[in-house]
Every structure is written in structure tokens, then in C-alpha cells.
Length: 439
Image 1 (tube, rainbow, N blue to C red):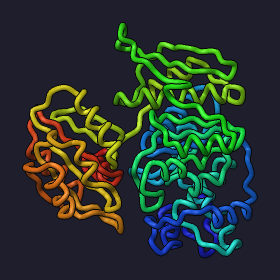
Image 2 (image 1 turned 90 degrees about the horizontal axis):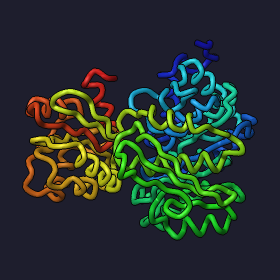
Image 3 (image 1 turned 180 degrees about the vertical axis):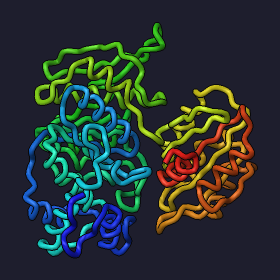
């Protein structure tokens, strides 16, 4: 590990504590805007050095980023990937060639950002600091393409400091209304803030907000929409394959028979189609073979995204935490086959639409095991219980001090023909993974 400068943290744990201390609300602090992060970026001398793909959206960002990362890596490019939040270790947020960055590289990048921050005389949020450090690390590693996931919204998110060569918006739905606005039109405008004049943009929302489409037109950003410019079809004759169709810049169409993606759930076909359309849009800058696309889609896996753990009872982990994501989860659960009972381990953050999220699973849960979540945004189990009573009347529930305790109680009750669903937050899934010895 690199030697720490006097007064600087000595290891990654110390740096993460320092990042939290820079904002009054610690890691949970949100302070949208680009002025402060731009000042530090200028002090660092940051400048474009390779193609950038930026991904925004309410749901589906993580899967889309993972598919892109997997395909581009198999195509032979040196890929840097920035995502958030992490499940178990901060290193998961910054990946090189599909592997989490090591502690020494992160510490070195943090030290550079801190020096520039002090020179600029500004504070940074936890996420802003990490975003700047990720860029430093990617530049030092000589990355040939970057895939960056927006943290919150788009227009004022720190990731939007960097001009994308291609901007992707997955879905637009209600989440983070306190920051992004009360309706889909407001939220759509914020997410469209990652578009750039003259550079391609794609959206895989089947009903994109008018604000998003209008913003692309005002900018002169060529916008492709799912269902109009690209899409997918299930192959009824061969249930092991699906077809992608898209429209190239020269107006030609193509259809490709593809094996189903490695990530579970039918919604992944939409995300996979978005990724193929994105790669088509960047074909002149980043040519990719069909072999890389096929292998990349098949061999993609992300912990916590409808992750089904083998064994009896079956255990399903999902980080979904808003009504749209939970609607998809309900659909995926319906495709799993028959189980006698489904026990839900739930922990959520206080700023989420708890009632709307749980309503998507109404009538599907045999008993709710409700968990306290720590931190300033964490919701207590007793508060969840009141929402359960409203969203799923008549169902039984119990309260537990943390996700691990809730999962243990569910495991004690569940039989071999039952399943356990742990969901509602990255914190809930992380707690379940640690309790299962997968941390």
C-alpha cells in the first residue's frame, strides 16, 4: 500500500471515514449541483481521455452497466466501470476489467482528490469525492472506455460532470421525489440532463416522458426509443432464444437470434436490447463482435438482482426498493414455479414509497419479517409494520432488530417447499448475504 502523507488516512477504512466527515450528514448527505465538483476537477486537471457511456434511470441501471462492462471487456477493451451503491465493500463501486479496484489504488486516488479539494477550498459529498477519485483511477489505469452509472437523477449528479459520448436512460418512474420532482415529467427532465448536443441518446422506457423527448430535441441529441428504433422479440419457436432488432444510422435493420441473458427475469431482455442498440450507436468508435455480445450477455451476473440461492428453502435476494422495481420482482417470482409459502424479509429506507412498494406483492406473502435499518435514512421495523397492515391487510408480521435476525427467523419457520424473499434495500440484501456467510 502506498505511504500515507502526513495527516492523511493510512488505509481505505480511514479514507471512507474521512469522506463521511466532509458532509454534515455523512454518507447519506445529498447536495446536488456541479459547481463544487467542477472546481475540484479543474484543480486536478481532469480532461477526457477515452469514450464515456453514461447510464441513468430509475431501475435497470445496474443490469445495463453490467452488460456493457461484460461485453466491452470480452471485446478486448480496457474497461473502467463506476457504479453505486455497493453491497459489501466500497471497492465494488470502482471496477477495472471486471474486478473491484484494490485498496491501494483507491487510497492513492482519494489522496489526489483531497489535495485538490483543499486547494479549491470547497467541501464535497461522499458520492462526489468518490466520483472524482474513480476518474483519477481510471485515467491512471489507461482505460479505453468508461461506463458510468448516475447516482441520483442526472442533470445535477456528479457523474454528469463528464460529457458522455453516449447517454442511456433505462426507465423513468417515481423515486427520490424530494430531489427530482413530484411526477414523471419532472423526473424525466432531470434524467435527460445527461444528454449532449450532437451525441446519441437512447431510452428503454416504453412510455418516455414528453419532457425527456423534448429535451433531446432542444439539444439536437439524436434520440432512439425502444419500440420505435430498437427492441426485442421472444422467439416462440425456440424458447431458449430471443431476437434483437434495431435501426442503424444507414437505415438498415438487423435481427439477431440470441441466448437468454445470464441475469434472471424477463425484464432483462429490455435491458439487453438497450445495450445492443447502444453498442450499435458507438460502432464507429468501439467496434464489438457478435461473439463478444453473445458471450457478454450470457456471462453477466450481479449479486442482489433477483439472485436465487440454491437450496431448500429457496432464498431470493433483490435490492428493488420502489413500486416499479417491486412490480418486476412480483412478475419474476410468478415465473419461478410453485412454492407452498413465501416469507418476506423486508428492510427499507425512510425516503422510499414503502406502501406502494409492498402493494406490488399483496397476497403473495405468507408472513412479513420486518427489519430495522441503521443510519439516518433507515426505517424502523415498527414503522414498516404500519405500512404492511395498510398494504397487505390480514397478513401476519413480526419485527426484528436487523436483516440478519429477520432472515434467521424466516429460516426457522420455512419448510423445504417454501421460499424466502429478502428485499427492499441494498442494506437488507447485504445483511442477508453476510448472515448466509457470503460476505
